[in-house]
Length: 403
Image (cartoon, one colour):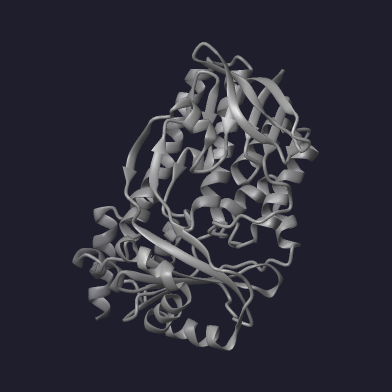
């Protein structure tokens, strides 16, 4: 019997299996994919709070060595004003990265194996095994098609927003919001970018960032009411959005070469209760949020860290497992709710409310607070602290004195 079976070997699952194995637990990590392989819906970005974790785990050098450029600069272009700077570092870590998933996920899977986790690629989980209302293991098929059953003290679903584990245990959803926007992206050569570029228009947006091997990720966003029509002719709508709302980027794209197919689509927003008798959820299986702020990978790494500590407490007998996982849910929610709410506010690309526009228009020329605003997206600056009334008034007062 395993201490833990982790279903899904992408960012959250591979990180969790690695952390559990490093703590001395017998962990089995399974995934229907084989590695290296790509993830066709990914925000790519690992913000500074995520790269800081990779550094602590001893893995950031592997990402940096993969021909993925480090980034510290970040611009958000609102058309009539631009916020440009560098998010404040976290524990000295000032760089973000945007690796391809066939690079990042392979690094994490290899690290899990090096730590002692057992890894089974090409493994299809068909169902959960149980005793009464308690999950006790999994049943699935390996690469040969043979039926395999494995037992564990706990089964963790790290298998994405359409999690089989979550469906099987009927995990409760809460704080759900509708699909707010959709994105389509692809990879370009000869489109130079130094860092992260976001462009915000009316009900539209665009973004770009460098990734492995000299490629640039370039995407466009549409509000939910429009994205269904976009799919009929992605290329025309994509290029039109760049030309209208991201002219500096559009010029570079015209001079570049598209190297891949169109990827993306709309994403829902929800929390799931992340634990129950014999099961738990982590990563997008536990919280899925709109990709417009590109938080998914960084959130997955953080939540893997949080749940690894909770599982260690429970499996070692320091406290009852359900109590430890309840604390994990509380810590997860307290950490992710501010960026979840901010992301859902920004996702439709609606015109800014007057008070928010006034605040953002007060930032150009105030580099320290511009950097701190950018740090909200990088999750290196606490959101409640930045939007506290006294801080907002301080920024507005400083701007009025300048003007």
